[in-house]
Amino acid sequence: MKKKSIVYPSILAVALSGVLAGCGGGESGGSDDNTLTVWAMGEEGKLLNEMTAGYEEAHPDVNVKVQAIPWESAYDKLLTAVASGNGPDVLQLGTTWVAEFADAGALLDLSEHIEEYPEFDPENYFDGAQTSMKYDDQIVGIPWYVETRTMYYRTDLLEEVGYSEPPANWDELKDAASKLSESGEDVYGLDIDLNDQITPFIFAWQNGFEFDAENPNFTSPEFKGALEYYTSYFKEGISTTSEGIDIVQAFKDGQKPMFFSGPWMINILNDQAPDLEGKWAVAPMPAQESNVSSIGGANFSVFHNSEKVDEALDFISYMNEVDTQLEWMEKSNTLPSRLEAWEDPKLADDEMYSVFGEQLENTKGAPPIKEWEKIAQELLATIERINIGGADLDEELEKFNEKADSLIE
Image (tube, rainbow, N blue to C red; front, side, top):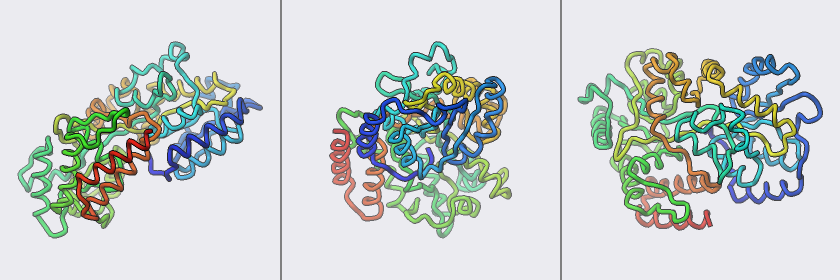
């Protein structure tokens, strides 16, 4: 999901539970007329207005009003909406937000509508995306678009250090990154974004780690081994703790010839580094026990106080039709959530996007617990103390595990 300001889950849960109890069945923003209100975040919100004509043509009695909300102000906006009873009918949520709002009762359970709306069937979506659809025994969101992380690499520079194919496993990744780092001054073979909270978990999942909400196991051999591997890149100078120059420029200059990122980087590199055409590619994540990656994106949900539930369901169903999703991909450069859409030549035959399609078949979503966002932030703080402060990894993992346990309790 996109970057945003953090509202801790415990604060959110208390605030929402209180206002939900107080506002009851308050009217949604579109209840007084024929307007269906949709809140969408970030750039998607700005573009979504261009996609509503098809729905309105099929539903002439409904006018869709899309409000674009910056990601950084979305939490406060949502809290205010619940408190006032004037929320939207349809809401876009980043996948890691779903559990928090579902736990507070702010999202309508869509389970009873699955049979009527075949687009809502979880089987239409990647296994990893299905995690974000559910909370407890409810279906609370429908995947709108998805993203995953793959490896971007300079094909020409890797060839110079003996790799005609991208690294396929952890050993090869470490070897290639080390050799690239030795090829010049201020060259870091693998760029790891220390502000990206998902990368450490990707390594952990690849090393066989399985999260247990009942008994957090962040001191397990699988998690510890992954964090040792992750932090070794910084200890050995293969990755840098300093942000330095922009990643596009660093990739172009060869200072950071490999990095992990999502599908949005394809167009960014094509637009900002056209001279690199033919000199870079994307590859699935290198494997340890597996090459699993993360899955994120955004879901559509129906806000708990909507009085236009039928219209909201129709809108979400329309947006999740395969043809609509492909049209949205062309407009927004985001990846379709529907499995069937990936059979289209626009994706299946594209040398870059097809790699993302391959990786999406082996992904994990964030665990559907309301505390996950804060646990992830605590892990970033732990890693910073190890990488920059020189703290002992074993001691820090013990503290982190205790903190995670207390957060869940």
